[in-house]
Image (tube, rainbow, N blue to C red; front, side, top):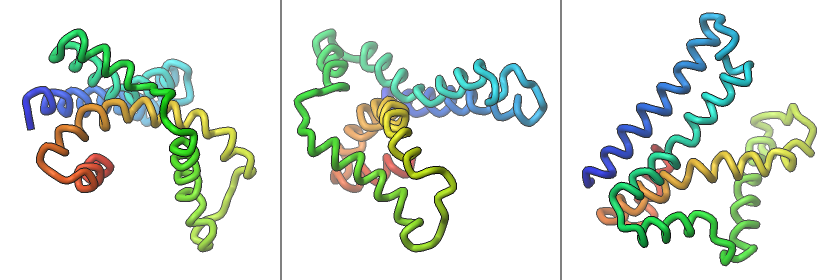
Length: 157
């Protein structure tokens, strides 16, 4: 693993866990203005969630040429992908969520329409985070492991 990737992992985990720890500790110790229930706490929590993307973008800008950095930023949102890829991704995520319900391992406690209401926040929240994991860590691991093994490692992390 190269130094940029190591720096990415260290900074990403350190910053995101620090931010989430602040929110968790505030809730535990009754500091309401930065607990998860407050707007400030939610902003801090979201910043922790998008830390992987922010670190990747910053390090890419720092360690790449201008052209390479621009190419990377353009690749983040690529409207040329097939609609079926997006349908497959969203459908797969929803299927995985419903498998425990189908086997009677859990119950749906929210109205079924909430699954559709939450699609956009899931895509934006999870998608932003993936910029870092799939943009920095995945390619680095693929230098040493086959694609599927690298994807499993990234998924575990």
